[in-house]
Amino acid sequence: MPRTAELLTMRNVSSIFAHLMRIKKQFPWLLWMLAIFTLSSIPGNRLPDEKVAFQDKWAHLAAYAVGGGLAVHAGFSPIKAFLVTSLYGATDEMHQRFTPRRSCDIADWIADMLGGLLGTILTAYISKKRFASRYGKADAGDATI
Image (cartoon, rainbow, N blue to C red; front, side):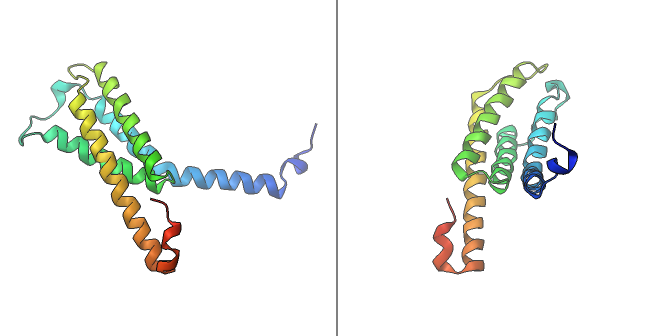
């Protein structure tokens, strides 16, 4: 049985610290996905009436654009960020099938995917521009898009 002093080597401590830093970086994205899940749990009869045409589609697009951007910020590659956000949108639509007076709508999922794509592309582009301005144009190719 290893002693406590042996367990707390610098290697273990640095590994734990690196893991905590990854979680800290992903926390905003995870919190946003939890917020989307919570809003999706509201029964349909408690939602406000639409005052603008396609208001719900614009809401989906905006929510998932933020989600896609936060996924890139959390360390996902842009392709993985888009895929994860799209998959989450699909599961969110399936979740709404079990919420009173809500339905699974393919048009909502398309809005989710378009929002995720928009947020992913914008965040990756802005990140690449920041990298180029901070480190010079010669190093800008190192940023992945």
